[in-house]
Amino acid sequence: MTAARQRWRRIRRIAFYVFLALVAFLLVRYARSVDWAEVGKTLAGYGPGTLAMAVGITLASYLLYSAYDLAGRRYARHTLPAPRVMGIAMVAYAFSLNVGALFGGAGFRYRLYAHAGLGLGTISRVVAFAIGTNWMGYLLLAGALFASGRVTPPPSWPVTGERLPWVGAAMLVAVVVYLIACHVTHGRVFHVRGHHFRLPSLPLALVQLGLASTNWALMAGLLFVLMPKGVAYADVLGPLLVAAVASAIAHIPAGIGVLEAVFIALLGHQVPQPQMLAALLAYRACYYLGPLLVAIAGYAALESRRRAHPPSADEAARAPDPPREHAN
Image (cartoon, rainbow, N blue to C red; front, side, top):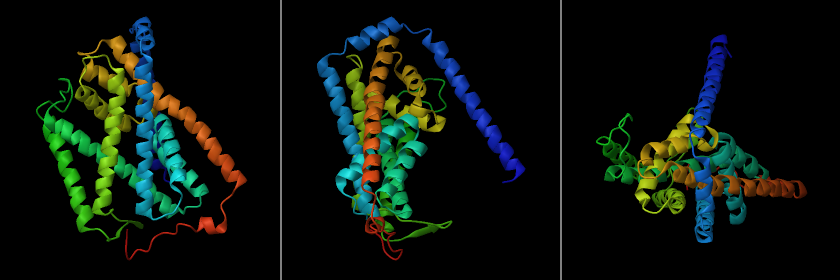
């Protein structure tokens, strides 16, 4: 590695830590202005029915997300049992939300799938398929919402309310182009810088869109039931979708501070600040922290199972890379 590249990496690392420090400073400064007594009162006011609905939506969302990897199993052509695939996917999802997509979502998938006997190429296809599924569904749902004109960004945002529908239309065009490409190029293997990939079949691409768009809708549904009455579902869905991109760009674990900032900017005029913070805290408890505790236990169970029953040579060869001449 050259000295210039090392210097650039050091500068990027320093800039990232400075950014984190700035975010922490702003969060502390903001937290001092919050009426936490009112937030606690709102949290205590959630009834058993609301909490049961929130837990049910969370469970449905995680099960739906695990179906990404079930569809990825068909795409990558491996034969791991469905319950194990779903368990790996849900563990990876919980860690991805809390510690980041690279270390959590991808890292845990590689480790757990490798321990299950899958090859590196097969795991890479599953990971790429799951990531693609998530963001293609995002493009479909966000594109439809933005194109409808239901989301009004703050005046200070670079994308104005007049331009946002055009952004949504471009998202929908990208989805259509993806579907056409899946239909036209199905069976063709692409070679880029030593990497080989192929697009899924059109039916499988439609499954991707259905799974991911529904999952994003469920996430917004969870926040919707936690918000005070009078807030429309679309008014919750828009900020959630915007916050997802902002969190991905910021690379802050769990999007801490980003989610809150986006909701305050887009929904602060409708919902009192203590009630909104209470809803966001309850959302994090249901969708982030609770599943993370379960995922830690699940990961420990998978690791103990691996030590007790290490994969045999036959299992390690269960999913060789598919031939390059033809595809799923």
